[in-house]
Image (cartoon, rainbow, N blue to C red; front, side, top):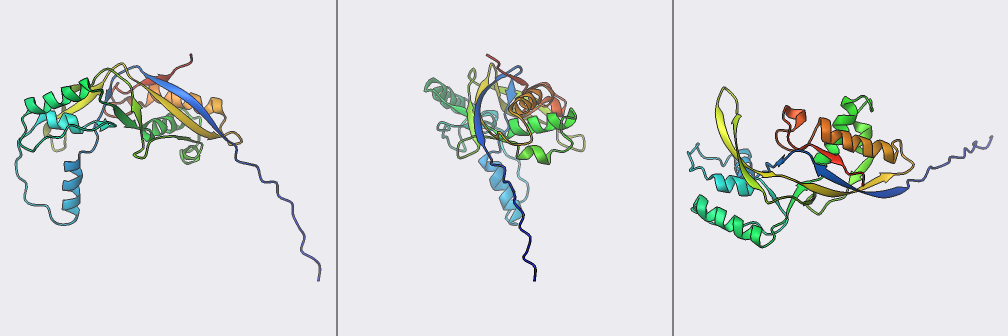
Length: 224
């Protein structure tokens, strides 16, 4: 019986490289994080525990506080706290150096979407593994900006019904990202930086971004 033919296979090594990028905002970021209350109500509905709809008193200041990704301790207050009391706690937090973050996946998805829309990639799947953005244990990176302000927007929630949303708006912002990529991969460092930059112009991040018909959340890669 003839011996099995052996075939030599060259395994191309995965060579992980890091690059540090600063993204500078061109238009304000509007945050809309899921609040603990919203997540609890969703879980209760899925578990069949949700009660009949009850009209709750709207507290814009609470919506504002809950819309942001806090890296430092979030102000703590009771369910009966007034807007004035909540905003005083918020101002205290700002005076004490409050820190905020944002999910890094927003920047990656903006880059992938921009590359696909521009015809630089035939599919989005191949780009998912082309690079990764380092983050903290919650998937966030720190956001540097002027102190956030409370923004009021009217939104449509279906069937012609309008509602008001109160969210945190960050102006004059930037983020520092650490990018991990495979030097021997399909996409070069130049490709990756260019799609990240394009994502900031054509797609943007978070609420009312260009990809969703707005002009917020736009940014560019700093070259200096």
